[in-house]
Structure formats: C-alpha cells, structure tokens
Image (cartoon, rainbow, N blue to C red; front, side, top):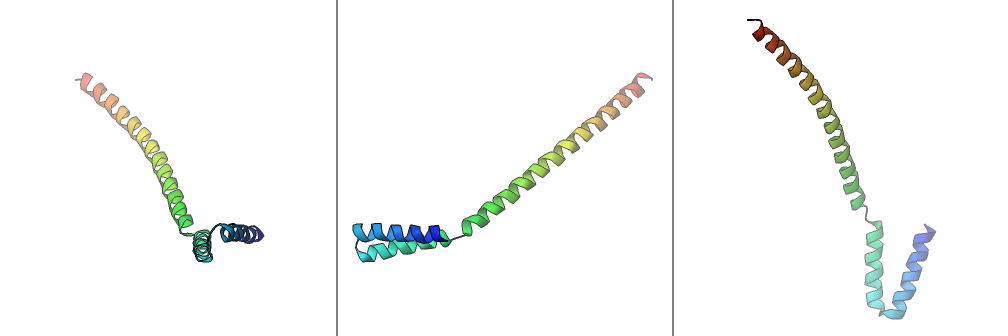
Length: 86
C-alpha cells in the first residue's frame, strides 16, 4: 500500500511542476482509476480457463483418436482375414 501512495506522491510532485493544477488533477484521477480497475484480471482468468479446457479437449481427443485407430485396425484385419478365407 505504501508503494502506491509513494508513487502517487511522486507523480503528483512531477505533474505539479510540469503541468497546471487542472491537468495534474485529471492525470492523477486517470492513473488512480487505472490502478484500481480490475476488469483485466477477469479477462485473464477467463482466458486461462479457456486454455485449460482446450488442453483437456486435446488430451481427450488424442486418447479417443488412438483408441479408435486401434479399434478400426482390429476390425480391418479381422475383415481382411474373413474375406481371404472365402
């Protein structure tokens, strides 16, 4: 908390020297709102959830794909043995 407070004091002193009081107030208000805004954190959380779902889907489909490949290979070899016996 102290780091944010010190940062605000530093910005306030710099802006007080370089800018009129009106603009200094607007810039400080904008910076305060930017630091307090947590909407980006929610978007990042949703992105991480989507990434985890994608990884789980890839793993599940890879496993299912290998299982289907084995099933069709077994069926194909059984059919070719059955056809050659005729």
